[in-house]
Amino acid sequence: MGLRKRRREIDERASGRIPGPIPGRTPLASGADGADPGAYGAVPGVDRTAPGVDRTAPSVGRAVSGADWAVELRGVRRRYGRGGSAVHALRGVDLALARGSFTAVMGPSGSGKSTFLQCAAGLDRPSGGTVHLGGTDITGLSENKLTALRRSRLGFVFQAFNLLPSLTVEQNVVLPLRLAGHRPDRRRAAEVLAQVGLQDKGRRRPGQLSGGQQQRVAIARALVTRPDVVFADEPTGALDTTTAAEILGLLRQAVDVHGATVVMVTHDPTAAAWADRVLFLADGSIVDHLERATAPRIAARVAALTTPSFEGAAA
Ligand SMILES: Nc1ncnc2c1ncn2[C@@H]1O[C@H](COP(=O)(O)OP(=O)(O)OP(=O)(O)O)[C@@H](O)[C@H]1O
Image 1: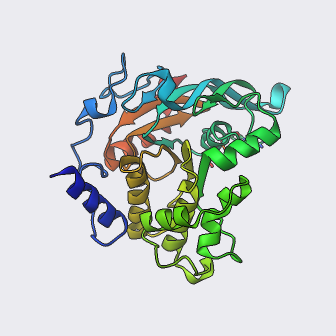
Image 2: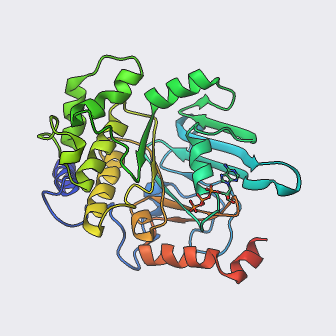
């Protein structure tokens, strides 16, 4: 299939005009995971098919040059409290994610997923280690600089949509531009609204839209500044299966067609199967990862994380 035709089909499927999965970069059919490792960049020294614990620093995406990392964490630790009652939410996370990659982060409750997302997105400060976003070391930035960086260079999509109900859809979408001190760019707003299939909804209020449409607005808002990274926290947690697939298709399309970088925390193996790579957190450490895996394979790996035998192996 020609590139233009494939892109048009991706656009149409992602916007719901054609039902069904997007060709080529969809959750993989059972048994197809692990195919085409070259397209995603094999990680040296990592046996992608072996079960068990891998302690290498995962790097994902086509690029291998450090300059191309959208997100880079080195030795990131986060401790809450002190002394005997201290909680070690992150115990030394090392990873590098290339621009134009889609990464899912999974793990049992309390494994550190939210803490990871908050530290990676500059919403929380690590107790140790460094975080680079789009080549900028954010670890020592002042609160003001961090806020400015989040507004102009990061996008966020949350489970609860987090739209402002009193603003129109278009005003919600351009909000990050306004907060970053730029003039609201209506052409750019129209562009991203079209990208998520809502070109005719700019004058509506969020309360007049379905949950799936509201999440599309949130994705448009996340993309409007052409951010270095979009962080998504359970973006489909409040949606039915069909609507969830549409939303994940849009995130996939943002990566494949528009070159975005997406990092998504999820509990749902079906959602994670849309990603290029799934990272597994357990007790504050990245203990495993899978490339282009099917939902059943991801589910099996999540289940293994909570079994006593795995905990014994990871100790
Ligand atoms: N503000 C805080 N103060 C103290 N402990 C915290 C705080 N935030 C998180 N923790 C602890 O850090 C650990 C990791 O929490 P985190 O919320 O990152 O896990 P999670 O994997 O996102 O869990 P869930 O899937 O249940 O949301 C947990 O033991 C949690 O109790």
